[in-house]
Image (cartoon, rainbow, N blue to C red; front, top):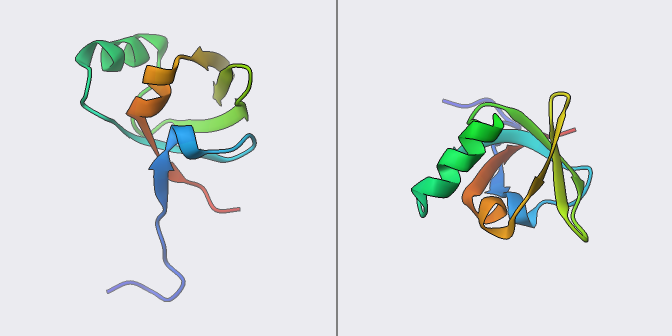
Length: 84
């Protein structure tokens, strides 16, 4: 069914390192308020995302926007990793 070399990898945003990029695949449905905050910020499944910085704050880039995310936000975002 799949061709050789085909793979899809996903992870929690919290496990990604600076410089890694991918596409938001889903929000973990633990806290509807956090999912709502992320949506209001403009983050949504299908959006490309790049981790710019992890410490002292987590900063991500989506398009031309940069966001500082709280730990609960970071834990709720799952990403399909982009392969270079």
